[in-house]
Structures are given as C-alpha cells and as structure tokens.
Image 1 (cartoon, rainbow over the protein chains, first blue to last red):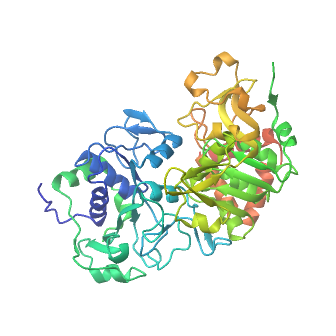
Image 2 (cartoon, chains in turn green, yellow):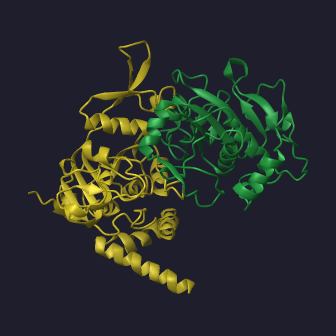
Image 3 (cartoon, rainbow over the protein chains, first blue to last red):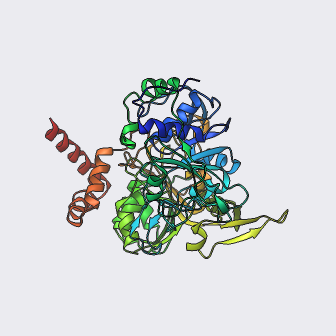
Length: 251
Length: 287
C-alpha cells in the first residue's frame, strides 16, 4: 500500500477515508451512510478493503458495483430492501449506520429530534427517526461535517441515539465519530469521548476548543492519508464532480 | 358482491372529530393527499394522526386538525424539514407522541394482530421513554432482559394511496416500496384506499404487488394524481417545484393565505386544475 504523496489532498478526502475506516472489518452487513462524505466512504470501503458490504440505492434495492455521488445507482440489483426489510435488518443487528447529529454529548448521546424543551421546542428537527432503534440494535457511527461547540454539547436536549451512559440494552455499539477536524471514539474513562486522531493541519487544541466538554486525550495520532488507489477512486470514479468539497470546505 | 367505490367526500363523511387516523406512505412519498385535502375542507377536527409523516401532517397541522400526533419523523425527503409541523411544535399546538420509527410499525402490527403490545429494544435508554412516560417495559418470561412493551395503536380509520385497485378493495403498489400501507389498513376499523386507477380485478398486475386485499378495505376512491405533490412512481415523481412552492408559502402567513386560497379552497378537481394552471404559468415565465 503506497501512501499518496500528493500534497493537494483535501480535508474532505481525509474525512472520507476516516468514514471508510468505520466499516473496516464489518464484512457482509448493510452499510448505511446518511450524508455525502460518509456515502463516499462506504462506497470506497466496498471498492477496496471491505468488498462484502451491502449498499442500498436509497430507495428499496441493494445494488452491486460502484457509483458516483449524485449519480444514478448501478443497474445491477442484488435484492429488494423495502423499509420493512430495513427494519428487520436493524433488529438482526447486521447493519452499521453512520448518522448525523444536531447535538452529541460526552457519552455519545445524539440528538436529531428538537432543540430546547420537548414540550415546546425552540426548534423542531426531524424527530428521533430510527436513531433509538439503530443504536439499541447495531453498530453506529456519527458524522459531523462542522465540528463546533453547538454540536458537541455537555448535554443533548433529546436523546435520540443512545449513548454509553444509558441502558440501551446489550447491543449498543458506538464505533466512532468522524468530523471535519478529527476522529473520536467512546473509549475514554467510563466510556466517554476520546480523541483518536486529528486531521492534517489540525491541532489537539483546535479540536478541544471546538468541543463543549473536556475530551479524553492521550495518544493522539494523525488521521490516515488516502493511498494513491483511494485518491484515484475518489477523484475519478466515486466523486468526479467533487461534491465532497461542498460538505467539507477545503481547509 | 360489494362495490366499495366512494368519493373523497363520502370517505370524510364517515370520519368523526376525535378519531385516530393512520396515514400510509412515507415522508413525501405516495401519500393519500386527495383524502387529506378532503379532510382540510371538512368540519372534522381534534384528530390523533399516526404517520410516517410528510406534507399530510404539515397540511393537517396548518389547518389545526391535529390534537395529537404519533410519529417517528416528519420530513419532505428532498427538503428535510416540514415547516408547518415545525411551526405547530414550536407553538406547542399539538400533543407530540414521538417514537422510534420501528416502534410505530410494532404498534400497528400489535393492533393488526389484536395483541396488547409487542416487545422491542428500540427506544430503550433514549428520551423516547422520558417524553412518553406512559410507555412501560416488560421482563422477558424466558430470561432477565427488560424490553420496551410498545402498546398496540388501534386506528379508527386508515387512509392509503396505491397505484391501482379494483372496486372491491384489492390494491397493488407499482413503485419500489409498499411502505407500511398494509399494516395501516389492518390496524384500522375502517380502511380507505385511494388509487390512480380503478381497474378490473384481472388487471391489478403482478401477484406479488397486490399486497392490499379486500378484507382489509372498506372504501375505494379513484383519484388520479391524488398523491400530488408527493411521489407515486411509476405513475409520477414528486412534484419538486410545487413542493418548493409549498414550503416557501408555509414560512410566511400572507404567502400561506394566498397559497390556501389558490389551491386549497375548492374541491379536488379545482385543486388539480389550479396546479395545472400554476404549472403552465411557470412554463410561460421560463419560456
């Protein structure tokens, strides 16, 4: 594996690799990315080190083969996956979702429901959607395209995705949090949030000051760079229109 | 042989204020919008609505028809947030029963199977338990695990929109997903199917797509373009331009009054006509 020497590697490309790494070792499960950069990461993982991942076209089909961000899904359909089958798959545990988060706290509790008191919120977002069931049943990671104290808060207003300090049952498995600045996980003391790696050009202080609670910091490394093959796949095959830069502005 | 054909007005005449009504489809996809529009025109109010919510929920909130809403999300898909639903929540105007979306399925399934509850892990540890203090857990009789007991959610009426149906209530979906339309019908005392076309039974299409059977159904309404502006593939995609128009109008009281007057003040035929005129106007402007 040759590490790319291209100095023009973008922040979005670093993020996509960090997202792809979330699915490493998952095997034959459904990878469910919820935004552009995680989608790029999941497709990249399947094209390289995790070839058995299942990917949905976003409607009701498992599809085989690579496809571009913003492009038409491949014509080769592997199986039918209507919402009811997605729910069955959630219960089975054979899924790893990468969700967004309007708020995320020190123990990985996530909020996508509303801001302010539930009875009369100052802002209503989507609702908890499938977040409680996802987190209670299978592997979950999070993607935060703009790491800020508004997202990383001391306490979330409405626990949608269940964190490590709650009793969500035996299958809660929060894997990693990827942001535009860093990669984090929940392997700090008492399963609290820990800084794993910072992206090139980012310092530990940058991440801490963009986080509304103290992070556990010990052996922080630099986030992995894409290989030449991965860069070529991203730039020529999976995202030739460079939509990834729209989600993560070049640093 | 029962002929269950009805009009939208006849369906709404069978609904009463205070009822619990389930609405099929998903987000801004294959929603029984002509039936929802008929409710907007009626005196029926104080409803408990159960929905994988989209503009059906938004319109009913805007018309102050909703007392309580049971939902996992409300979204317009291509536009993530539903402005009328957001406004109703921010005003504290509706009782919000916000559940995990899998819990909604379980609640309908329990009602359909005449069970008092079904167990799940979805919801455990989350604030769904905090904001819905009526929810209870149950200990597995085969072990020690504590599970969430999702209560059956019985519907007085279900409204769904399919691609085709026959006059007796057998119906088929031709798009990629049935969503939970069959469960909505089975969880309801009375289920009403609107459809793009009423066809002879022999022409419903592929057997595996005929997922709504007449034993579940009390009324059938032929309503071409009845899911507008939500999608009803392969008959038509979501009307994205019109959805944008809806969202823009919903964010401003004066614009919403104008939108309502133009599109929602008459019957279904005049709605469809007004949409057609709007589209021609847009085309003339862009030409």
